[in-house]
Amino acid sequence: MLAPALVLLLVGIVEAAFLFLTQFLLQTAVGDAARSGVVGSELGAASREAAVRAAAERVGGSLLQPERLHLDTLVYPRFDDIGRPEPFVDVNGNGAHDPGEPFTDVNENGRWDEDMGRPGLGGPNDVVLYRVRYDWEPMTPLLRAILPDGGRLELRAAYAVRNEPYPEG
Image (tube, rainbow, N blue to C red; front, top):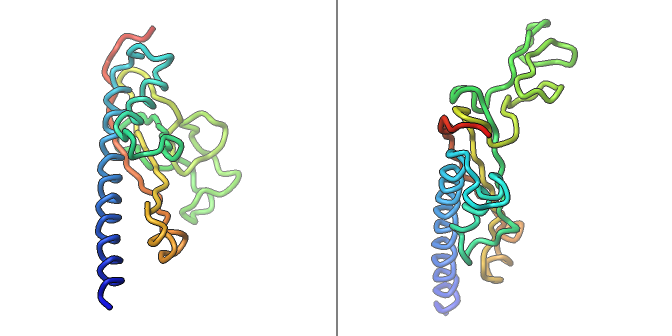
């Protein structure tokens, strides 16, 4: 009578351990990616972007599936600009940007954005936010059947750094 409950408890403990391990690996992966990108060199890779991606994937080893690992980077002028919207003139005073209101296009994409970061790895002395997402799901079919949405979770980790003052070229 207790066996099913004990099996479910044991499976839950193992799955929780793997979930925490995956989150730890994501934080380590984004840190390694940031350390790889901050120096501005390609370190033998085809490109700087490839070196950063390879650094993030290397951490996960066989536990993280590379196709589920989503890495993106945003470049900012300063650390305190991370996550901030592009500046705009609030003509009607409603506290929100409305179409037609003038704005400063910080990321130079031709439209107003709620986050002023521009995609890329930046240049010397730029602030870069590295973000990684991973679509995690339980390893055991038992837990996938019990949990809503098959137990899928989107795990996230982020790391902000200032690039070194390396010479461009």
